Length: 289
Ligand SMILES: [Ca+2]
Ligand SMILES: [Ca+2]
Image (tube, rainbow, N blue to C red; front, side, top):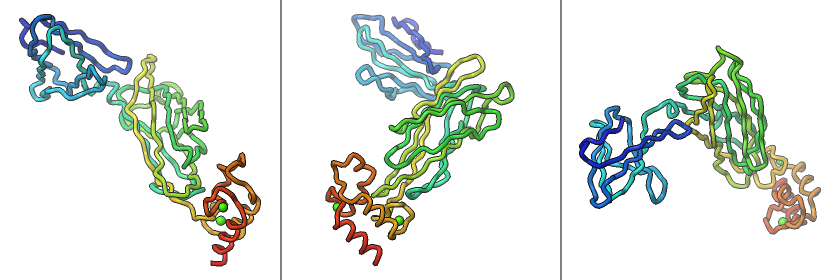
C-alpha cells in the first residue's frame, strides 16, 4: 500500500495501526550522509495523507496528490517521517450525531437532544458514550433509549457537566447498523442573566461489535441559545410579581459571604453584593411599573 517509487533509494518503511484503526507509515532515509528527496506511490490512493509533525505532534498537510496517489518529501540524512493515512477505513465511517429540538430556550424550559449514529460501518452491540454540557446554563434531567432493542443500562452524571451512557443491544436483530437515533436526552435551561450559547458535545463515543472489537466514532456537538431571564424574575415564570418580591424578602440580608450566595445572588438586583432594602425597593418599582 506504500511503495518507494525509486527502489534504489535507501529507505526503510514501517507500518503501524493504532487502537482506533488509523494507519501510520514510518519512512526513514537510510542514507546517513546525504539528504534525499524520496517519492512514494500509494496504489490504493487514499483520500489524504498527512504527516505527524515532529515538533507539535499535530497532523500537517503534505504534497500528496490523491489523483495520482503520489507523495514526495525531502529527507535529511537519517531522517524519519511519520505519515498518517485517511482511508475512509471502518473506524472513520463511524460518525455520531447530536440534534436538538430547539435552537433557543429560556430559563426553566426543557429541551431534548437526540444522540444517534449517522453512519456505522459494522454491527454495533455496545456503546460507551461520554458527553459534556455546561452546568452553568443547563441542567441534565433524564436520558432514555429511543431505539427498540437497545437498552440504556447506566447513566452517570456529575456536577461538572459530564454525562456517561452505557448502552447494549438485546441480541442479534437489535444491533445498530447504518443510521439510527439511539438516546433522547432531556435538559432544562437554567436562569442566566445574559443570553448564552450552551454547547452540548460528545467527548468520546466507543462502539463495539460482536467480536468485542472497539471503535472510536467521530464526535459531534450541538449548541443551544439559553436566553436571559427578566431581571427580578426570581421564580422564572417570565413575569415580575409579588411572588418574586417574596423570594427576595426571604433572602433579605444575605451577601457575598453567605454560603448560598451563588443560588440567591440574582436577588441582588443592583449587583452591589448584598440583598437589602434597595433591592426590595427596585423590585417593588418593577411590579408597579
Ligand atoms: Ca416571576
Ligand atoms: Ca443589592
